[in-house]
Image (tube, rainbow, N blue to C red; front, side, top):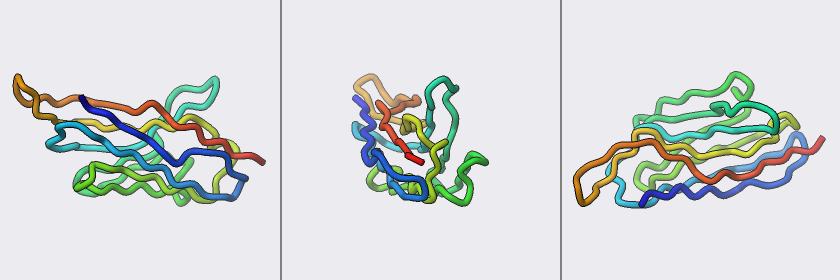
Amino acid sequence: QVQLVESGGGLVQAGGSLRLSCAASGSILSINTMGWDRQAPGKERELVASITKGGSTKYADSVKGRFTVSRDNAKNTVYLQMDNLRPEDTAVYYCTADGLTTAQAMGVITSDYWGQGTQVTVSS
């Protein structure tokens, strides 16, 4: 059973920083892309940042220059360093793992997974 466990959310003032972590566990053989989505109240879920196994990154325009995504492939863990936070960054942040391959009794299975979400609140 694959689990993605997030940590690091909380309340911070505008201009402050937070660091999110997400560890994937289970009989994991590899993970293609890990990253973070977010969903603010009344808005659609959106991609914040992602990073491939090889280290290629992608960011939403709204967070470029402020957020940094990184990962530790050996630990199946992805991080999101968020600096210069703004009130509009307030949302539930979800860890994502796309192309996650596991070893099951019936063979090798590849699927996409996401975590339960962690709340990030930025006060003005």
